[in-house]
Length: 83
Picture 1 (spheres, rainbow, N blue to C red):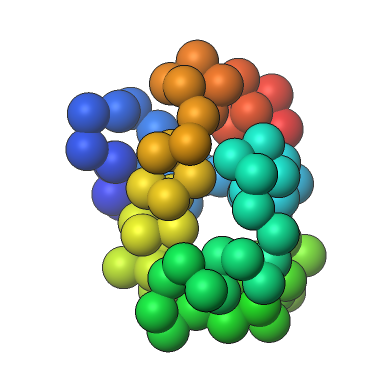
Picture 2: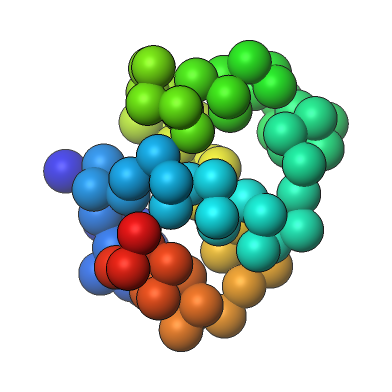
């Protein structure tokens, strides 16, 4: 399992609720993520957040880094560990 660079959070252990909260806390709507990241569509984000389907490892890493770039390490840890 992949650990994000400089962090001890395993992206595969992030719950669908935590993915949604990370996105919202980082200030992104689903469509805004689609604009920010090539090859990710709003439907992919929706499926991930509704636990219907996961994204590829590469897409999860890019998505996590996008959210992390807008949040403090403490915020990310709190959201991931509590949700």
